Image (cartoon, rainbow, N blue to C red; front, top):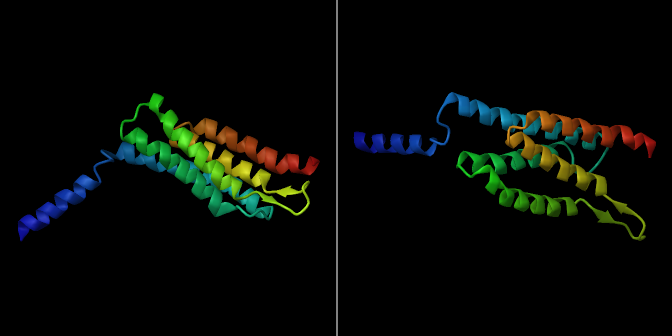
Length: 155
């Protein structure tokens, strides 16, 4: 019976072997947390403006984008080969954003373009956070908030 428990313990330990040490666990935690927080800032702005895609949506898009680049990096995919991952991510987010766009009865009135663009931008911010480009992600978030909040008043 002891060998069964030993096998179970070894299997369990092997399944969590993708994080070899505390430094790597901290790196993963920081990158994913950064993506969630920055996506949340933009999502909060969208939600407080009464838009359909709000806090949770933007946080999940940023987190998912960060995870889509973080996991291949952990698996040893060279940075040069990440272009295929990014291409798929960008195309997939485009479909998600398209779902936020609604065309009204009259041809001149389209709603949701800015929300779709914010979802696309949050995906890019999540990618930056997932790649460990925190300063770039923060600067992009500030620019996005300025565009969404301040430029809205000049409309």
